[in-house]
Image 1 (cartoon, rainbow, N blue to C red):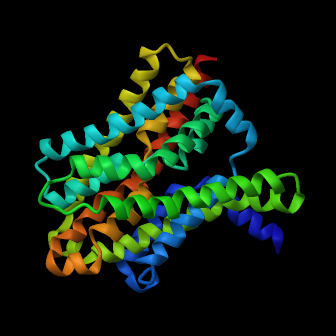
Image 2: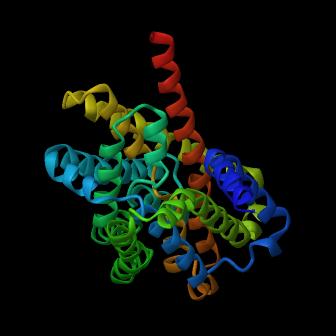
Length: 330
């Protein structure tokens, strides 16, 4: 039985993107399957995903963080300048509806995605640097994400920066800290190592639930607006993600990083924690009270949900391209 569970976890970890896309399709055609994922349930699921990330952080990662503070600082600055301002520029270029604009800005203002560490590994990047960047950007998120959204979002939309700060603190920083402490004190035990090895699959299941829940929420709008809305948002998500990779890699070249670190900073900047953006969008912009007054508010979760799936796919493709390039060069 345990072998079957391990095999299922391995499949989930290896094929995260198809499973996330499948959850979105199922949610669209069978809403009842994910209708239970909303409100506090989404926050709890995101907390579990963040806990799984914390379980991978060791004291060695913290020590390595202290050894390269300048590179980590550059990575954090790149993370919280490139993606937010590119998102803001794209909302103006495409003339997006204010709530669609808030969705893509929220994605841009979130920290690096948890899956970026795996993608850095596949790309033969600097995994330690990747983990450090993700950890620092996530720890900065309670302050940076609300402030940037408050600054860049349309002034006609009410942004609850204080509530967002507390939500990120409870749902991301606290679980990561708990996971890190568990890893520090229990990391050498065989049972804990088995649990730790299967946590990436738990993260994939959590992301599937969040995306499925969001699709159920925005389904009426998608049916009303048709494929035009999906193609418009996909175009913006594509440009946002691609510019993140290009500009992130350019920062690495500018500061003369080695090849591994250039690949890592490109992936870290380009791949956002869109799961966090989705939960925040649903909690603070597409909540029932706001939707009652402004039905179009549900649109803000569409860019977040599409980013969840797209970033996973594009990051994996880019990592495989880097690996293929090395193999061809060799």
